[in-house]
Length: 206
Image 1 (tube, rainbow, N blue to C red):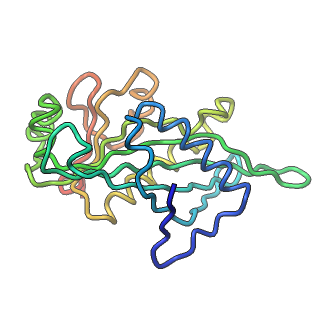
Image 2 (image 1 turned 135 degrees about the horizontal axis):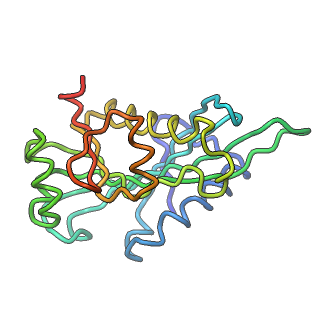
């Protein structure tokens, strides 16, 4: 996997690299084999303090070209975020706890591939040319389920939404929210578009 760090250095030590790889391995299980070898941009980690300890989020993003997508003439991004946590111990130890995966694509792309998602987004004010974030996987506590209700899931979700806004996306949606996810979303400002489909239109939620 080729790494591209842009204007900043990747700045991942051996332990961070190991945890990022662990999270990526989990997130890539549902991807076509050909997607896994695209050049990746690795972003420096960001940190948050939570009730459970210091949360860090590492990010890898890859660009998919139209020949690798179900429909031609479009581009998409895959962004995988990997969560690590450092708790009070002697010495402090950082460990991998979870991951998320987001697809970024245009609403128009969904019209020819996921018509139900397209119809719901259009109904809630999105235009065909808008680029949106599709939260495909959300497992911030994949390896640390005992740490629920410590603010980790909320911190991760807020980070993903803030990142999407700063990158100029029009909104954020969750196409298949299970029972646990729906319970979590009750404490957020997501709109319920159907039983399992939740969305956030940034223009409407300002």
